[in-house]
Structure formats: structure tokens, C-alpha cells
Amino acid sequence: MSTPDSTVDEGLLSERVAGGMLPRVLTSFDMVAIFVAVVLFITNAAVVQSAGPAAFGWWLLGFVAFLIPGAIVTGQLGRMFPGEGSIYLWTHKAFGRFWGFFAGFCAWWPGVLVMVATGTVVLSYLGFVFPGSVGSWSVQTQGIVIIGFILLSGVLAVQRFRLTQNAVNVVFVLYGLAIALVFVAGIVHLAKGNAAATDPFDFGAYAPGAEHGVNLSNWTFFGLVILALLGVEVPLNMGVEIRDSKAITRYLVWGSLAVMAAYLLATWAVMVTVPGDGRSAQVTALAAAVSSALGSFAGKLVALILAAFFLFITVVYNYSFARLVFVSGLDRALPAAMARVNRNKVPSNAVWVQTAVAVLFTLLAFIVFPSASGGDSALNTQTKVYDVLQAAVTVIWCLSMVVLFVDVLIIIRKFLPRFEAARLAHPVVFYACSVIGGLAALVGIVSTLSGSWTPLIANDSGSVSLGGATINWGTWFYLVGGIAVASLLVAVGLYAVGRRASRAPAAAVAD
Image 1: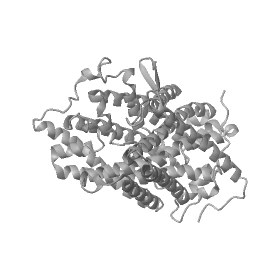
Image 2: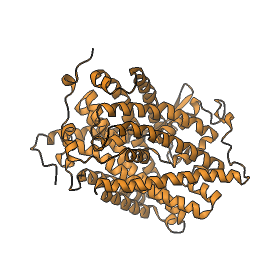
Image 3: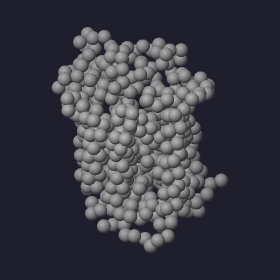
Image 4: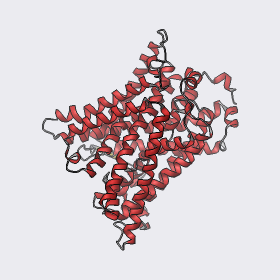
């Protein structure tokens, strides 16, 4: 039995006032650019090369089991509740104030640390172009430069939103051209009469009995693909800043198609061009593919474009995830100061707080711990700290996606009249998406805990076989799982502090 919206919807202050504080500037094209910036880490097209030709099978499985269900569910929730904060708002509608904040934290925390990851990718491509200088920098020097990147992203994120988004759009177009050049490089390589470094049409590699075949024993490849497709809901963190509600479904359709095409084409190009002796799995393999087929100048040009794009990804992560802090401040789940906007009508306090958090983690991972590593090398220490932190937030991000897939089922039942008015598909579709997508996100969590990202940290204390999949545990499992749990406890603590602060007189929310 359904209940009318008015009797179940407690409502949030942010739903009522955020639209009046932030300008509506985002078009469909802007939303596609943001979606691609968040989801399409094209370097994953190189990382997945370790699966051989079966990589295409794993990509397709990930698209069907995770990306498409996520887009369908996000589209429906965005149509019903297009407010600021996406999963923060939707989980509040489904489960109440605390769980809304908790889900928002799970979606926000990964975004902050990904800002550190993008800096390392920028340096990797700059090192490809300038191996004698950037490529030889110490870990500590890299950390200082990444801190500079993060601070620059904060400066750009607090400017007039339309101006910042225009710059992102330009780099987005260049990103598409760079990926197209990578694909062209693959075609030119074969057109010159060269054999494919790895035959992408070796369909026998897909067979369950093959070394990297699509089967449960190779389930970690599926986990890798899931991790490469996270972020489908992030553009709707800026729900009230969209000019036309049709942009919600448009960005999900066109953005998903762009992501799927780019991953498949780039994976194919690297596979046929770069030898599969480990070089094809390197972050810079895309630029190496272009250099091999089109010459050194073209390869370095692509590397510079990719470096610029990943620098601007940091800006996108900064302004989009800051909206979660902003709405939490408006709703007094965090101090009200987090809801202040500057004269450009941008939540500047939220931007600078998360910028400071990202800088702190960069300082720890690249400077403090490596400098105090004792007998271990600075590079090894940095690698271990960085990989553990990134894996921990990956677990948390996947958890937020599990919540998203549950949200849609609860919201459909609680807000049936609103669902019927904005329905995109039959309810059975959403139940199917919820089950399939939720299970895929759980696989992402378990595979991250099971498989160490670095040989420097063992994960061999024990294992269990589950339907052919082997789940390992050890030092890696305990470190990543422990940090993830500690992070979630921080969310609970922040909520308690924020609620206590909400009892104080409200502060102004505009400068």
C-alpha cells in the first residue's frame, strides 16, 4: 500500500533553498563532460591489458552488470528528486537523515582522495614527455607538485562556475581527440603490415577454461572493471544547477555511450600496438601506442593532452564533490559554515575544506611517511601508503553504490505517485537493476579486499573458495578493511558533531 508523498517526505532545507543560492548554468553538454571526467579514467584501458583478449569480455560484462543498471537507476532517482547532493538526498528520502549523511560521506570521501590519484597520473604523462626531468623527480618532489595541482584545482573550483565549466569543456573535447588518436594509432599500426602485439580477436581467450577466460576464478578482472566505472551519479551532486531536467537522461545516455566506446577502442588500440610484456599495462601505454605508430611528436602531444585532462579532472572532482559538503552544511549535518557561498555563488568553504583534506593526505603519502620510512625505500613506502588509501576509498565508494541500488526500491514504494509521474521504465526493470548492480558493486568491494594492488603488501594469510572464486586475506585485507571501517566511524562522528552544532544559532550562508 502506497503512502502519499506528503506524509512520508520529511524534506530537507537544502531542497528548498539550494536552488536560490546556486545559479542554473549546466547544459546537457556540460553534464556529459562532467560524467566523462568522473567515470572515464582512460588509463584503465591500459591496466586491463593483463586480462589479454578477454579484457573485452570483462568490459562488456561490467557495462551490462554495473554501468547500465547504475545509469538507469540514477536517471529515475534524478527525475524524481533532482535536488543538490544526489545520493545524499535520495538516501535521506529512503532511510532518513542519518543514513542520508552516511551515504553522502561514502560518496564524498573517495572523491577527495581521487584528487590525489589524478595528480600522479598527470606526473606520469609529464614524465613520459620529459623523462630527464619530471621522470627523475623524487617521491617528495612529486608530492609537492601534486599539492600544487590540488591547490590550483581549488582556485579554479571557486571561480564563476560557467567560466570553470567552459575550460573543462575545452579540455574534454581535446580528451576525445586524444583518445581518437590512440585508436587511429592502432589502425595505422596494422595498416603498415605489422602484426598485432596481442590478437584482440582471439575469442578462445574468452572461454571459461582459458587462462584469463570469463569465469569465477578470474573474478578480480571483473572487480577492476567495476572500479573503472564508478561515479555515474556524481554529476547530479549539482542537481539544482542544471538548466533543463532533460539533461539528466541525456547525460546518462550519451555519457554512458561515450565511456563504453572509449574504453573499448582504447583497449583495442593498446592491445594491438604495445607489446604485452608488461608495457601495455603501464599508465602511459596510450601515449606509447601513439608514439609507436604515429611518431614521437604525436605521442608526446597525446601525453600532454592527457596530462591536461587529468589536471582538470581534479577540478571537476573538487567542485562536484564539494556540493555534498555544501548540502550537509545547509541541513546542519555539518557546521553551517560549510554552506557559505562566495560572490561567484560557489560553495567556496566546502571546496577549500576538502582541498585541505586532499593536501593533508598527499603530504602524508608522498612526504611524511616516505621521509620517515627507515630501512624501506621512500618509493616503496609511498606506493604502499598510496595504494592502501586508494583501495580503502574504493571499498567505500562501492558501498555507496550498493546503497544507491537499494535506495531506488525504497523510494519507488514510498513515493509511488511521484514515481508514476516520472517513470522511465516498469518497476521490474528497477528491481532487476538493483539486484544485478548491487551484486556487481559487492564484487568490487570483495575483490578490492582480496587482491593486493602491490606486491609490496602480502595478502596470503588465508583464503576461501566460493563458487570458483578465491577470496584471500592477510595484511592487505586488514589494512584496507581497517581504514575503510575507521573512515565510516569518522562519518558517524562527524554526524554527531554536526548535529550538536545544529543546536547553535544559524550562521549566515553567504559572504
